[in-house]
Image 1 (tube, rainbow, N blue to C red):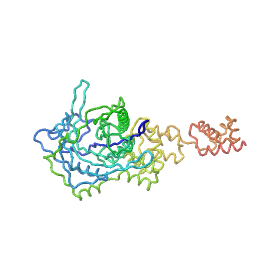
Image 2: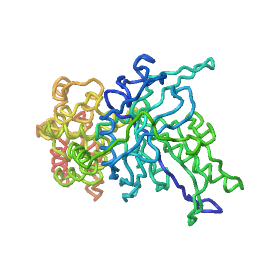
Image 3: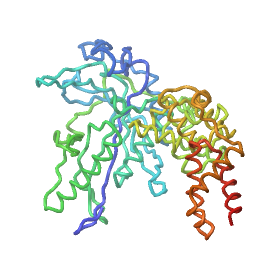
Image 4: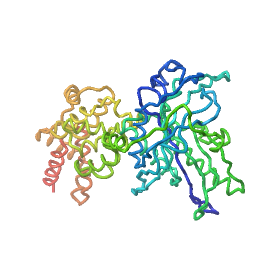
Length: 488
């Protein structure tokens, strides 16, 4: 980023906390529930509420899910990892400490490649991924009091930390979207940031271009969407540049994002590692990870976004852009593949999804991962495309039918029949409409005959209007040319 006096660059590292979709919590048998739906404090026990004298037991499935993520992020999986106590005191942490991993995490030294807006690819280093337990959830009331729900306390939480390789809000967004897609493809996290099961935090500093030293950073928390993460990161970069250029110094602190003000706000001073007084958890054993176990997990892994994109381009013949859009979210990829399984042509299906389906969803402010909830099913979309291929309807009518199906559901073929929207291909009917339009527009006809061939587009539009959009465009175009030639 450039200002009048100095060219600056951002230095950003990301921390992502992903709840793992195991059946039970990290150290007890309590069920993992949707905390936005379940009654408060109904999925709790003496272990996850920190009662004296209880002992935690490690959830094996959570370890396997975490190893799977580590492999997907091209990490090394060390032969052992150790849980530690991270001491801090908040109302939503019933024990007064969090069981986490510090010196000996589960996965280290990985990377993922992200796609940038200019079409280039950048590699982002993954420093570590470690397992811990989630905290409870605070609800702040209008009267100034706060309530705590411990349903979330103890849910398996995987923290993924990057190297400070990110240089802009755009790169931060690309990283967050790619990582969320990987977690969704693996089936270990839903990616629903609105429910807090995926939480993204950005550690941000700025420095003059050419300077190698790191300057003081801030951490931005409480980001409930990737869109807000982008906005908060961009705002914080610009704020820090202003602070440095005005002669001030950035303070190391934790920031929150105020969506109403579209600004970052100070929450507290930033803790350092020594503030947490880490020490090995005495109630849990060292977790030994054999190479056989790692390879068994690797064999169970599904197709990931990059491999799916390659298959879409090489086997289905899609262009790089279309394939990239379709694999960006597992829900979109699943929708697309369901349409192909229903007999759809890959290129046509991709075009209709990316242009028309997304347009309708954007009008409703739906995120793309919501595609599985719309009334246009993959099978419905293939049926609609088939009507166009058979010349039953033209593209313009198909878009109208798609909008009707999107609103009310149903069969496109049935809608076409009920609404009388079938395409008119009778040459006699269409020629009569063409002759009428030419007779009604003598000036435009003369302009065309004088060499202004683009006037034919206007005449085409008039015929289609007269046919209420139902004329076979190919035949109409041919008849216009024939009738105009007769008038030369």
